[in-house]
Length: 504
Image 1 (cartoon, one colour):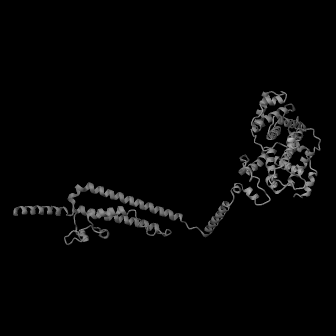
Image 2 (cartoon, rainbow, N blue to C red):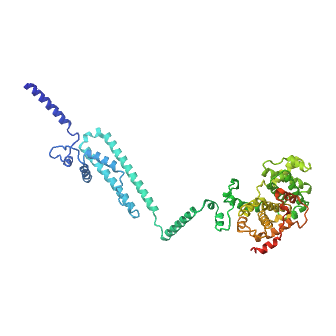
């Protein structure tokens, strides 16, 4: 029993010895290490030293530049953890300091140099003591030093990049002079006021500034507010008609081409041709826009090229063919236009003349005519009426078509003639009320005094004071479907209109 127990105790002592040996530290304990960890008494600490102790040890090692090999690894780890901290930028709040950039740069260089020296000094001390192991650990140490150098270069590059950003921010934060600052503040306040004012506007008034300015006066009625027809293009109506007012000046015919260019054609021949084309348009039930465009094409061609009177009818049917193709859904064929001329001209001649007309006019067929403006102006004349007057619309169209036959009316613009026809039609139907109000003046852009000459000339056509025999238009509007407006005449002359209401 004694021998057995002694063997067991011996085995336990061996196991204890092995366990004690395995718990022994694997690192080399130096005097500075033992002093920092409190091992001067020969006892190892039971737990890992606290963070404060390691931080104190790191500071002492940096000051004395003598640390162990383990401290070297600790410093490398701390540098890798702390390289993102901007310790040298403690004074970044004062970005306008003159020496901030230079101080930051010097601090960064000093810190990098301190880290470099504190990390490399223990390495050289260790190699001096372990000279015989230099060849064995050379590769490992070179790799570690290369990693440290790469890390230091990355840290330095990041510091330089951050400092350059701060420098750019300083250069952009330039002090603005007082007068510029006041001007900038005033412009900002003005822009804010404009934004608030624009946001408070109604959508319809914002689309066109002209309309919003007109609606300031309560006597001017918005003629587009109650229209629900999508083809009326109410949001763009003002812009469309403003554009047409500009194009009517560019594509109007000459007013003196009979005296200067056409030596074989007279104004009476032109009137006979237009009067006949009115009958043709009635025969084929063409829209009024086709008739107005036909007369426009004829006048524009005669304004640029001489033509014999034998070919004047050919020009007329050719221009109606072109206008029909432009305005009609189902235009008449070429053979039909040859038939109405009693086959005076062949289809080949009509097509050849069509090519000449289009090339001479450069295919510019989108032309504002009297009918273009008459729709808009009649709408403005009836906007205040609960029930639209059909007679007013027919009478205005009748007076406007009378001007197509007369060569002398080329001196008036289409928009002016449309406004004059509306004014005379309102005066013919009612002599007790003012026929020209602010709404008509706003949408036609004509004052009553500007229409006086055209109204008086148009009245002579209405009364047929010259005794013209061209009655195709008169016969057209004497029919019941047109409310027999050709038989209506004003009880008072138009001259008394301008005297009574004292237009200025």
